[in-house]
Amino acid sequence: MYYVYLGRTGLRMSALALGTQTFGWNIDEQQSKALLDQYVEAGGNYFDTADSYNGGESERILGSWLHERGERDKQILGTKVFFPTSEHVNDTGASRKHILSSVDTSLRRLQTDYIDLLQIHCYDRRTPLEETLRTLDDLVRSGKVRYIGASNFTPSELMKAIMLSRFHHWETFSCLQLEYSLLVRSAEWELIPLCQQEGLGMLAWSPLAGGWLSGKYRKGNDIPSDSRAGRKDRWDDSAEQRGNDQAYDIIEVLHSIASEVGRSVSQVSLNWILKKSKGVIPLIGARTQIQLKENLEALAWELDETQMSRLDEVSNIGLPSPYSFIERYTRK
Ligand SMILES: NC(=O)c1ccc[n+]([C@@H]2O[C@H](COP(=O)([O-])OP(=O)(O)OC[C@H]3O[C@@H](n4cnc5c(N)ncnc54)[C@H](OP(=O)(O)O)[C@@H]3O)[C@@H](O)[C@H]2O)c1
Image (cartoon, rainbow, N blue to C red):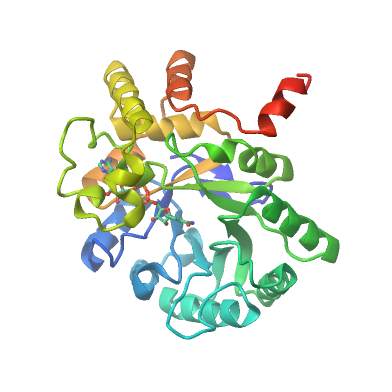
């Protein structure tokens, strides 16, 4: 494992972060804790969860493991707030009320007195941004939270948030958690360059597109029944959503590069992210220890330029206007 600074902060994170969305969803507590041990033993130090994951089970299991392991200060805990945590009208969004009560609940479940990275899970178009940002600033000043981040913001929403915080001398977002993989590359148009220019770290969620880039889905073959898409237990992983012609073309190139370099398809997919966009930390998910072992071995080797170009080309989604216009008329 190697470590990178999170954006312009002094915080050093492992090059692969661990997502815990599967905890309490399609794996039980014991299996989840085995994955946590395995990740830490490989040198990993960042754990991603959310108040809304599986009714709080993901946070609870992570907290219980941390308590048993007793190495809280060695680990970096990231959680998120925005999605509904109950039926109550105010148990959702990025309002002052919801953020503050959610943080207290997360601290209890995680069995800790501080959250390293608190992220707004999605831009809240109903709550004034100043209300959200001022609340996050208060939380950092109170010591309950160490760094703050955004997730699922558009470029203009993110830039507005950064400028508002700077203008008011509030704590500013240190990172963005964004969807990014060979199947979802739109973050390259503006979000990734924006984060690089403004000094934000980046965490890529669903780096294998929910498993689609792991090699187990292939054109002409049945969807494996013991897979996320086969079980249909996540709407956005359905074959209808992901399994288009371009996805299957990408998968074929991945298979051919994987056999050339003697690596697995998952490892090639993750390695492409690491090499393609400097500063992006893939947030790996895994349901089994075998999958986790495989994904952790995406480091310590590199795809060559030709292999990168083949993957770039097959996954190309073009540039929409105005990016294409600007690209054409901007002098290099
Ligand atoms: N900010 C956000 O809005 C947001 C959204 C989504 C996720 N996230 C975060 O990102 C993390 C990762 O997301 P994700 O779970 O979608 O990541 P992913 O890596 O794209 O997909 C993980 C899934 O792919 C399959 N898989 C993984 N490695 C494999 C391998 N080597 N071989 C075969 N199958 C493999 C497993 O599913 P099966 O075996 O069940 O098929 C696994 O659960 C989450 O845990 C969460 O922390 C954040």
